[in-house]
Length: 152
Image (cartoon, rainbow, N blue to C red; front, side, top):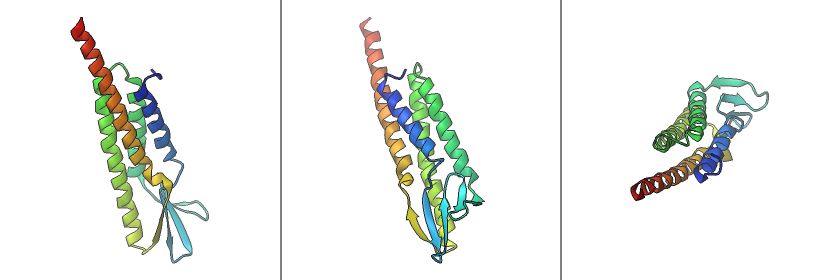
């Protein structure tokens, strides 16, 4: 049901998580001549856009986050399950952030590279906030329905 506030928050989180497939997390330069970017698909060269190293765990985790988000949107009648899936998505987004920093640290410590972060690095944090807001409104709906059941 699109008119619910939590569905709007979940849709926004879905859209910005899908954007992570298209934008790089950061760029790093080695010897100021070779410039690489870390995306969801791997570490790629900026000049010819060839992927040097695949980051399959990052890609798989991002696909799982998007899939769970889509499922959560359509489970609007099962509010408790919706809350649990949102909590799972929050945990997976924290894992996404940790995994990104692990891969970034691994790629840059071996090469002594200079790192330039992109705006897409904060997208998982924004989606975590949106999941918290969705949980808040799902709980308020659940509390409202329970209070209506007590009145009957």
